[in-house]
Image 1 (tube, rainbow, N blue to C red):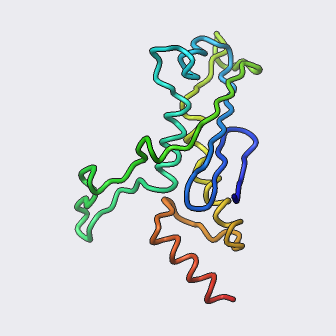
Image 2 (cartoon, rainbow, N blue to C red; image 1 turned 30 degrees about the vertical axis):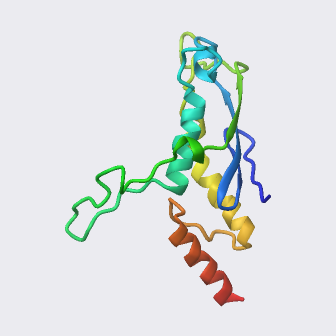
Length: 157
């Protein structure tokens, strides 16, 4: 498995599909830690949802328009997003080590941790796997774009 790991908030991926996602988030002072990390029985898991959004933006989700500016991805049949079976196992490590000095309660955001760096991590992992640093310049990395990158690699050898 080809892997890439970002030390702060991100994802471990294998070329073609995410195999596991590690999301570390320092949420500042713990106002709702169990709700953020998904340990509360009724909570939406904000960090796992953020990972799903990050992977979707990096690999699937794209607004496509025709030459007249009309949307071509107007339904879920045309606009791809990660489904449950597409999601890797997500390991959440939630810490409260550095309260924000800019908030009276020391709070920080939580759900965006998985979104922010997913594109860069996946692009970097693909660049590394195909041996072409800087090859990925546009997201999402669709199968068609990946095929084009591989064709460029073969033609440059």
